[in-house]
Image 1 (cartoon, rainbow, N blue to C red):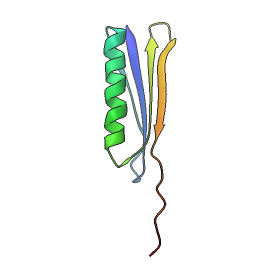
Image 2 (cartoon, rainbow, N blue to C red):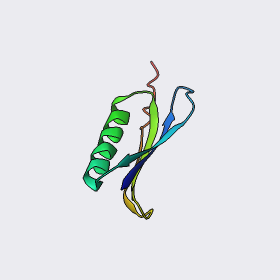
Image 3 (cartoon, helix red, strand yellow):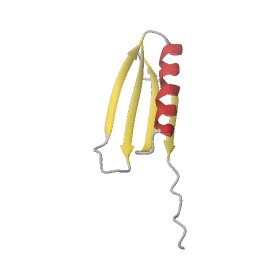
Image 4 (cartoon, one colour):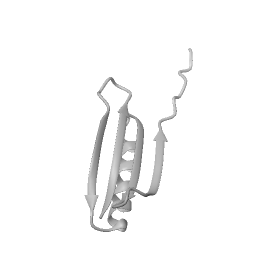
Length: 76
């Protein structure tokens, strides 16, 4: 068994979110890992997305934290 852990923060005041999702295979967990990160990058309200894939013994198989870059506003 493999587990995908997801922790999300937002830039619009929404409360932080988290979840743990079980997968039968490592490939299934890693596939979902990439889908979660890609979804966060496409959603403008996401500030950070942290994902981990753990095996049944708690060993981290994959980890990534993505942070939206802040683009400074240009004064006119």
